[in-house]
Structure formats: structure tokens, C-alpha cells
Amino acid sequence: MNLAIFASGTGTNAARIIDYFRGTVNVKVCLIVCNKPGAGVLGVAEKEGVPTLLIEKEQFFRGEAYVDELKGKNIDLIVLAGFLWKIPEALVRAYPGRIVNIHPALLPKYGGKGMYGRHVHEAVIAAGEKESGITIHWVDEHYDHGEPIRQVKVIVEPGDTPETLAKKIHLLEYEHFPKVIEEVLTHLPNHR
Ligand code: GRF
Image (cartoon, protein in one colour):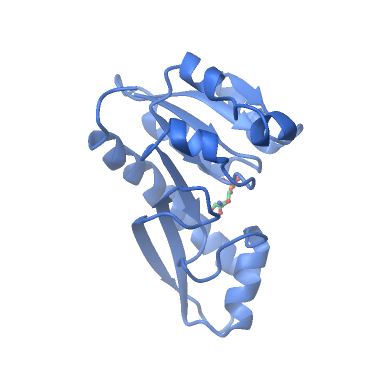
């Protein structure tokens, strides 16, 4: 099984996923797709020797969404780990039931355009929520919208700040995302 990770940030989740599948015989992270030159995830890819594809807006949204490049690499599953662009219909159609995302909150709350990183945790704390968490879900052509695969909760404590909450949620992501990807892969129909 070949994974492509789409990420535009620091790439700490990407690093954990690469690490988790290192040494497995049948799962390989074979591409990092990124839309941000200079993003930390590109350094992770370089260190790990994973090829990268730097994508450009016009071609992603108005062209063929890089489907040929992904098909050329025999990608079985696309993993979004801190990728902020919406996934165009052309890509959803080319990979039905084969794109997963992780969101740092309990969707459907605190999702959608502009709800990423610090903005999510600020909104959760400002609303006085008692709990937050992570949502791993299938991806469709709407932001943070597809069917959930797994949600894991964490308590928001009275003294929590967006930073402390972000830290707790990142730890939850590192623990669960690679395992959920592994589970998803075992249920994936074996064709491309
Ligand atoms: C994660 O919190 C993830 O939930 C969100 O983007 C963040 C990526 O963080 N979609 P990192 O780049 O993996 O550190």
C-alpha cells in the first residue's frame, strides 16, 4: 500500500506516520505533497528520503488536481495531515473513499474554512467547552465534512490556553492517527 501525505505545516504528524510505518513491508509513505515552499514538512521529507511534490494553486484547482502524478506513483491512500486547501472534486472523484483527514477538534463543531491550528483552540476555549479532541474522517469536497472514522476526546481544563490545548491535541494525534491509518488500510479494497 502506498501512502501520499498532503501537508503544508511543520509536518510533525507526517513524521510520526513515516516513523510508524518504517520497516513494515506492505505500507510505504512514498510521497509528500505540499503547497508551501519552505514548510517544515519538506525538511521532514528530506531527512526521511521521501520524495516531494510541490503543488501550485492554479493547477490544483483548475487543472487536473495532480491526479496523473498521484496515479503514476500508484497511491492507494491520501492522508491529509495539516493541509489547508480544500480538496478539489477531481481529486475526490479519482480517490473515492481513499482520502482521510485529521482535524484538531470534535467535528462538526469548530470545523470549516479558517478553522485551523490556533484558531480552532481559541474558539473552543472562548466558547467555554469542557472537552475537545481530534476527528479523523473521510474527505469529500467540503471542508471538514466527510464521514467520521474516529473521534478521541480530551478534557479542556480551566487553566488551558490555546497553546496547552494544542499540545495535548497533538499528542492525541500522534498516538491515534498512524493506528487509524493502518486500520483503514486493512479495509481498503485492493485495487487502484
Ligand atoms: C494538526 O493539528 C492537524 O490536526 C491539523 O493540522 C495540524 C498539523 O500539524 N489538520 P503538524 O504539521 O503535523 O504538526
